[in-house]
Image 1 (cartoon, rainbow, N blue to C red):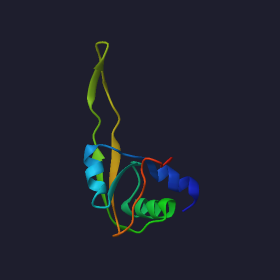
Image 2: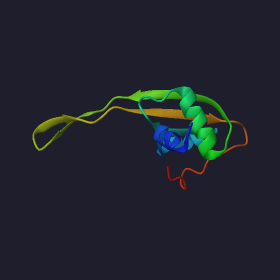
Image 3: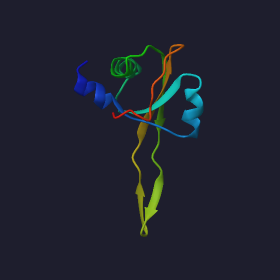
Image 4: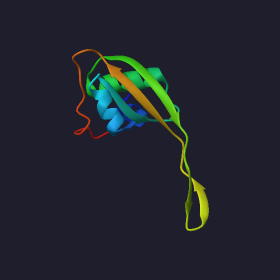
Length: 98
């Protein structure tokens, strides 16, 4: 997989209270492409961050219905991946520029 494909699979790290608690157990969350497979995500994370990935779990997040100035609209659907790293490995998501 070339570098352009790697960075199109992993879009951005997701940082929230839940994901920060998961980092204590070597689990990190990323926003990924909607057509990315678990194998694509695993290889992209391993090559970009130079770590060993144990498992990948993927969640399809449905967009919310929102109203803006009396017009109804819908936010887009997106995909989130939870990546569990091998013991003793870590990623500094605050310094990541994906």
